[in-house]
Length: 271
Length: 271
DNA sequence: CCAAGTCGTTCGCGAGGTGAGAACAGAGCG
DNA sequence: CGCTCTGTTCTCACCTCGCGAACGACTTGG
Image 1 (cartoon, rainbow over the protein chains, first blue to last red):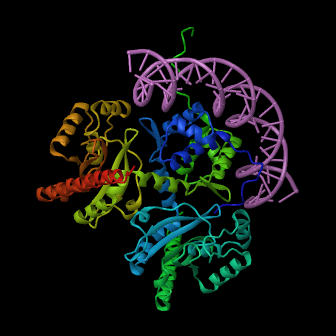
Image 2 (cartoon, rainbow over the protein chains, first blue to last red; image 1 turned 120 degrees about the horizontal axis):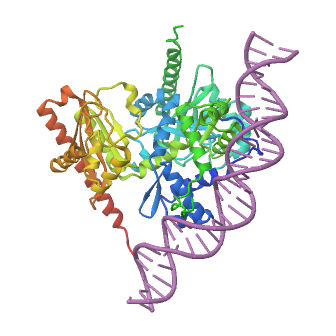
Image 3 (tube, protein in one colour; image 1 turned 90 degrees about the vertical axis):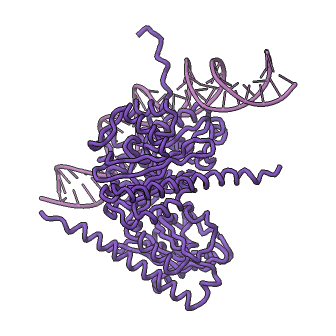
């Protein structure tokens, strides 16, 4: 959970920013040479060079001939962060079950910096989409047009939701995207009433999804679970209901897992 | 000091190093506050603070009350790096099959900076070890005492192997660890002859493993596959042979996958 | 076969960013 | 109600960082 944005005046280190500019450029270019990076980033070759040398020494970049690439150092940190997340630790197993039962895509998402970040995704048997997408985690996206995102928004403090909208707006992705603030708040109210969120072709045409929030014992939102599938399957009332049932069930089970783990770790306090 | 200056080692950026010091400290401490970090790193509070502010702006750190933690930004970069790796892209499926068939732990590893890095691991039905370890990727470790590591070493240029040993030595983990350079080279020769490597309680007492290299069309080593299990199962000659069979088979299939993908991407060149 | 391109790497200089340390604002506690 | 923890802001001085030019090693083409 992020607090408010850093004060505008807070000092930032330009050298560190440059280093991450290099990192991101290496990602976008799938590896690159010194000259290419320098041109793209508008930096001098020597500056880029010393950044690459430093990153390499820190083991976040590897050099292969004349090209520099990101190293697996990021994977290790990434796996560490993921494993630390309660939602992943206690929801992974359940999500796999959910994908199995419904046969559709199942997602586990959380919020960071006002955006939706996927923690895990599992492809069910019937799931649509190319095989390539299966293992790929897409980058953070806005919260207001996904089932996972709206399940989260519905349980964030209202004032934080306002701040997020102020920051990112309500970008339109399809003709069904909710782009009006009041309409969104109405929808979020409905999510709270029903206990689940929906995404009715609001992000991708032809795709429907159902999501449910996962909260810890204190009521704080940890993230959400969703199942998504093609409209022609999902529109079917009975099918839709069974998906809702499965999703809310899964979210419920994960909540229990989380809370049991919490109290469990509190138990062995002997003193 | 009137001699000419030593050929000035490549310049490294101390500010960037400091930033990654902060990142690593956040990992080790599972999140921390400004004061704690400053004390641990021997930096001033203000310096740590500006690093944290910068990292937060770059979305690699999140703040929760008075504690700063690593964000999922690392997961995204990490997944990107992993998905770019040929061995993972073309070996993931096969590794899952391998774990299924043998029922043991199966690993996919590669080399970076002279160390062994696990790309993926799958737990078979009979596999030993606590459930917790299942999803956790351990950190890079030396190459000389694992089956995956020795499969890789056996196919690196001999001179590189020497450089790696010079750099890291041959640390002993158990009484069976090979700590003599010549003995290791003998073992690597055997690996090349037989086409697979073994780890006979050299890393962990009671654990045996069998590994096989995966190389691309040019003969360059991409990494390796392994299966590991408890000695009492693995010692059984027939069982051992079948594991060897499965592992070498899997490595072979992955090599074919890799090479087919290579030529496939070369095909659509129309001009 | 040499000249004119690459490329990554090194060097030296000057601007300005970085880091230390002290002071500040708040929260929590006795 | 002060004492003592936080995190945050401020200022100043040193030295790091980034630039631009030059270097050596390779390729390419005339």
